[in-house]
Length: 126
Image 1 (tube, rainbow, N blue to C red):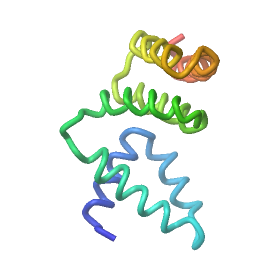
Image 2: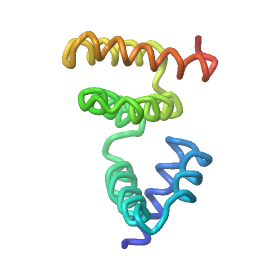
Image 3: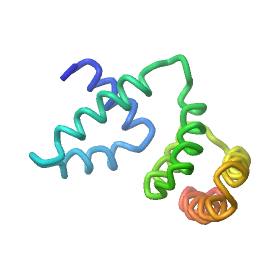
């Protein structure tokens, strides 16, 4: 494992998803899934999010559209929270969901609005 990339990944992951979430996730890792947690943190968050070519806000916006296209709504909710942390506004979130509905289908847009409403309410944005 590349320790430097892993540490950068931890920093980026915690900044976007929150320290409590990441620490809880890592603490729950066991011999079965710990290697995945480590590699995902290193690769996705260190290599991917650690590349400063794309800022965190833009990366969050991209992730929301890709994760919605995959239909991974638990991850979408998590990254919706992270997108707000990274500066995505309620109005930008609405526009992102409009694009999701156009390219991924109206039912997916409906699901994203449902989840986003809960995230925005929890964040005090609604």
